[in-house]
Length: 198
Image 1 (tube, rainbow, N blue to C red):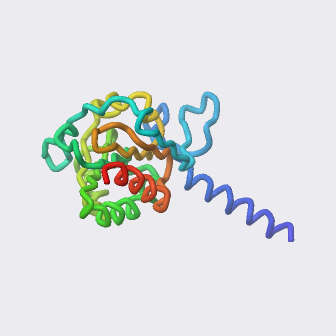
Image 2 (cartoon, rainbow, N blue to C red):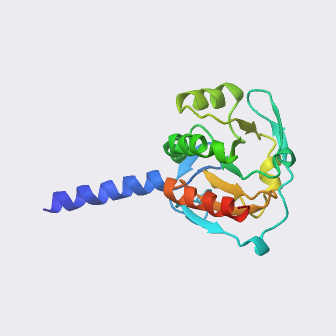
Image 3 (tube, one colour):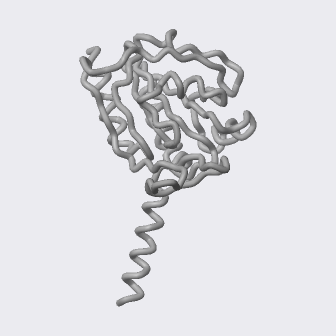
């Protein structure tokens, strides 16, 4: 009986580590787990925040180049709901949610919802390999200069990965998930923002 309880506890801890957000530690390597004072990282537990239309900050002004070499300016996407996903390849929670995000992106493409990854860590080969491995249908910006993160200061925690942000049709942050984005939750957040324009 005691061995069974120990196994359950170990399994629960392993699951918690997987579900926690992944961030870059002081040595540049990925770490995961709960927020610990002076540990050098911040966990994400999949909690979400949404803002009513009258409470949203200004439109996000950001642009950059994808790992495929294409220029993207969020200002050109005004009128569409945009989902930004901040990730990097060595982050276990980022890998865990990648296929769900790819499926949601495909499902909402006909509704005019655009997905865009943001990666401030990986080189081009690493990022493109991730996109191929997980069949990611949308591009990611090379944000190694942290320009997009800076544009979302106060919305995206600098050290929490993954983080997913839903922008409304005016380009304003409408919702945010820190940690793995539960597919059902993310779909509901997108649906709520799409309904505003209906």
